[in-house]
Length: 259
Image 1 (cartoon, one colour):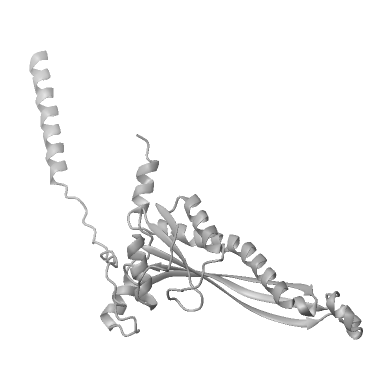
Image 2: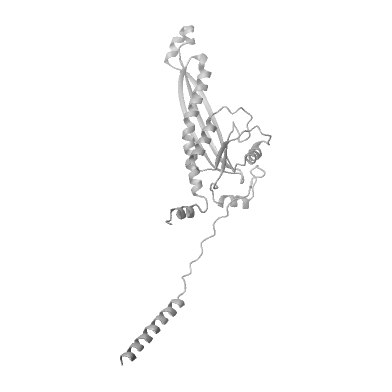
């Protein structure tokens, strides 16, 4: 009787397990609706004519594409004087060099380099893109600064009643106000990723004959001081662009996962 009971229990347990497996097999996974497809990455330059005449479809393609900085990017820093075009002036300003050093130290790019605009090239945006291609840089950081100066007499100007005092007494106040600007240009797509401005202002006293010299020295000091803050703004926005790169979130999670 004991053996018969043991066999009966064995068959009962076996039948229960089989039924449980059958029930598990019968369960179907829950179906979730797929979300909208990710926007296509912009790879084409729709500004080939650079005259502002782009079609409606091109406009929508540009605005719907994700904005990001490519991995292992090479960035060229190019000073421009007035317009966004190749400039023939001698590159005396130290600001582009400071921007290159800041980019190199950040680790956000593979290479940052100053660009010489003396290579044979076209004018306007086409010339900028040709220069970037020669340097094998996917992005151009275009730098420029503009200043407005003004002068006014200060209380020390009262001594100018004696003409000899005008040679030695700093009775003229020299005011300088300016904007340091950096624009990141995507060479392959012809789009601008961002523009940052650092506004600076200062004043000093000078003799009437030394106003021009005082203005030049003041501008140089403002550029040297302002480019540090401008670099911080550039790096802040570039970090955001790097974080926006498609797949950046998955890479961060993968890197943080235990192995």
